Length: 209
Length: 92
Image (cartoon, rainbow over all chains, first blue to last red; front, top):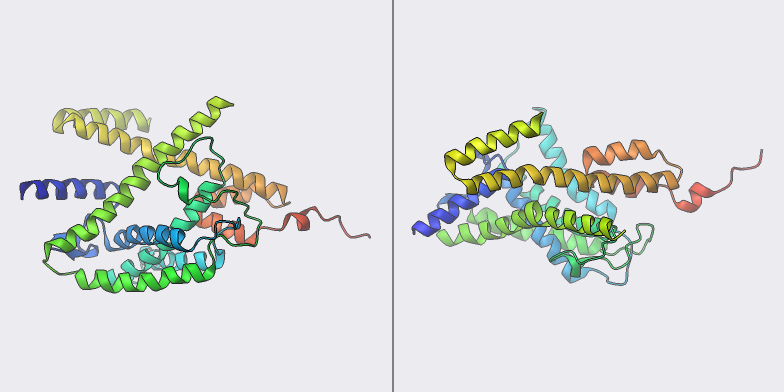
């Protein structure tokens, strides 16, 4: 039991590096506050869903970017919700924060993979290499991830939204771990591992020249 | 100015709460710098691409620097085709 508490403390510490962790904006799941706020919870889970969408629906031979209009439409709700709250026009709710975060993460993950494919590194990017587009060509109209694939992500987002919402407020301990472990995985991968790996690859490329 | 201050603050914290936290603190200091370098690489790509299409590279560089990947999505939507940019001017 003490080990679990230590792990929760570590999760909260890692979460505090990327999130304000304000209790009123954070979901209470499994008798604990999650390590990050509702919006970041949505974004992190959405990121994983975005990668799953890439794995399932990408067209390996295509070179064009993911459908840009659907990507932008999926990102926009989070920006509108955050911005209108920041300027004091309205107050958001945890449900809205969660759903906008889910949509944002699901759209951003494929686009991040595509953006990374634009840089030609000599070595493999850890974990993401198998997802990268072999010959990314932003001019190509042949979309690597179609609008329908992204909309399938949106449909999955709505299922996940109701699943996470039903877990919120529950004291069943397993729910906490079901959500916090994937969240930590996404944070550690994107905030620590990926930037350090990219820096190493960039230095390696510069030295080879 | 800011970086030596943050480092001295982290060293003081390290003595107080343990060197593991100091390591984590230094990593936290390094990560934004690395992301900034990645953002700069992305901006350079956007600048070159915009200039090659007869668009304002500097303007798009600033937009992508401020808005990140969102700016890149918008840039990819609105940028001109290369053939359109290279088309000769119509005869007078």
